Image 1 (cartoon, rainbow, N blue to C red):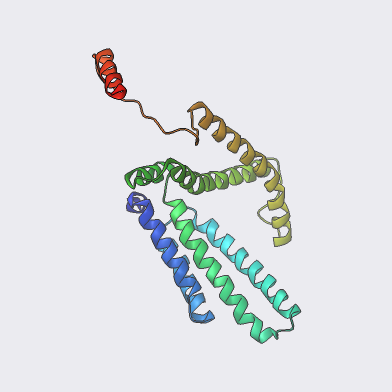
Image 2 (image 1 turned 120 degrees about the vertical axis):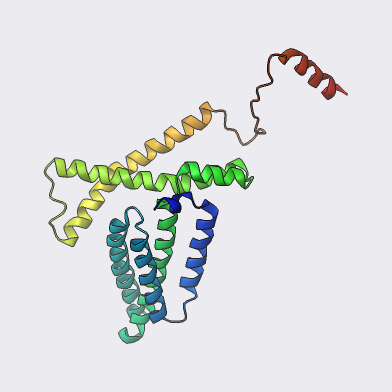
Length: 226
């Protein structure tokens, strides 16, 4: 849906924070699970790009969170019947939170973030942080998929295998992804240096003053001298 991409970035960000607060303030684990399922269902109904991959990741996140919380609470001496609702509530909160911010990342381009930040008159540093935070993550995920395609092209079976093998292959993709992330960070920092980005100096802009450049500059210098 194109209108999702045209929606102001800060409106979507405010909605994501509202969803996160609602998820963490849910009165019980039943309400939390229902709210998390509703968030995932909305992603499917809105046809957000990459929702199928997110659903798989959310299922894996739910399993890992519940397993870790059940183990932790059981080691503390809490009965399993009492620990299960706590683990389910925590998993539901995380799924709802990640679903909200996944929606923001998938429907916001770096250009849209830059335009919204410029319209809001945000400082350049804040604009840069927002653009990198919500713009780099989709690019890294695309690199992750390209690495997986390269593994498939080399004959590695990463689809029709069990969960332990998938986790092992995912970790194998993490090393080249880390290398790619470091290269990307270096490229971004090098580009900022080329464009003269410096926090210690005031930001300047270039304006076209027309044919009468020198007289205007002289008038400006006289005004500054006064």
